Figure 1 (cartoon, helix red, strand yellow):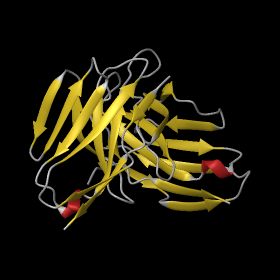
Figure 2 (cartoon, one colour):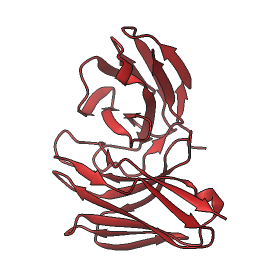
Figure 3 (spheres, chains in turn cyan, green):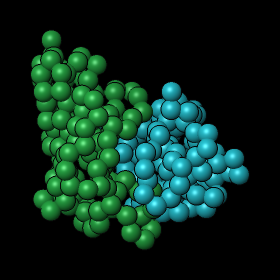
Figure 4 (spheres, one colour):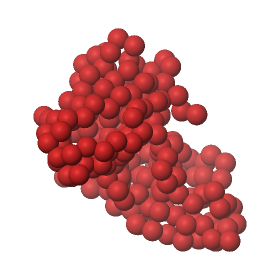
Length: 114
Length: 113
């Protein structure tokens, strides 16, 4: 068991709606990264949070935003959903910034946009 | 640009050895990771190479050549449970890239009896 938990595990939304995904990091880990994994593809880095601030961002538009809370848990928010946002969203925690070391992934939230 | 290539699919026989190759071209390099992902599950860490050479961990070994932009994952004594997707990922490092891994598309390995 990795210790990283995500919710919800599955959800269905319609185009134009907004979604919030949640992640609790592994005990002792203060850094959370979010990845998007389309079917049959490798994960793509969305952004990372460290000490409640965004600390590194991939090539995703501003409608993808996030938060990190004092207990190191995190949220990913996606506004104005598009069909291409359908994917598995993975949260990963690690012990610090710099070299990522060993990332511990949650089971993911599978989002379907209709 | 950032590019990581690995074969899409491979098939091997139980008890055999299989080598999964990965080539990369990235703007920076501060280490290469291999992850295993079973269908419907989270990726799990297998290995990390930052210097040239071979890292061995039980039935799994990973090799890196930085000058060639090349790595491979070697799986020995294949078991049916090794059927999974194997993801190659590069940590480019550099300003603004903290914590960012660039993943290949993954290699789906099917182990047959």
